[in-house]
Image (cartoon, rainbow, N blue to C red; front, side):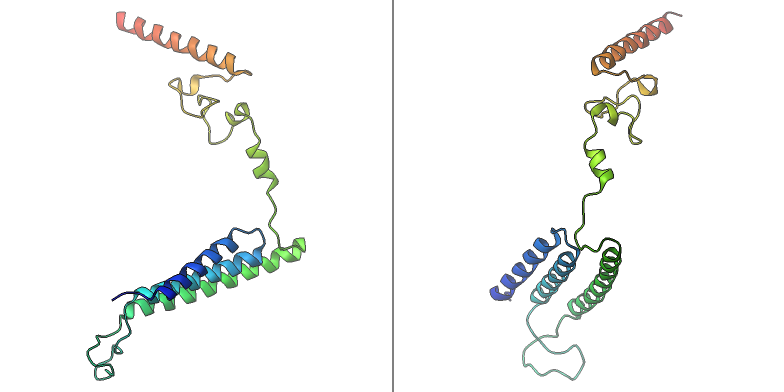
Length: 178
């Protein structure tokens, strides 16, 4: 039981074309790419489902010596077709709504994403997903916790961190003598 090379090649071409179109910035090409990719995967499922055989109904066999066809593959493909149709309808609605506002089909860069990407390490330390104790260069948490106060320059930051680490060690040593 082997799959036909031509069908597998067609699956690969459809999937590659779909991925290529999905990576474009125009919404119509993204939708067409999704449809191509879905059809390529459905065809791959059919090819992997096994050879043709008898229908899975008792008394309806018409091929001598062949087993029944696997119905799970057919159910998966039917479900995938319905889901793809729903997603394509949703994307067409989004594309139409976007076209009403911008009269263009191309997705542009978000200005907020551009601002976030161009921030300096100093600005990153005050980001909502960062703690005041995070290292401004690596973003890794430090041992100082929330006690660290961020300075304007990284050199000041290092000096502050060393001072506070030294103070914490002195406090630890004093606590052991009491």
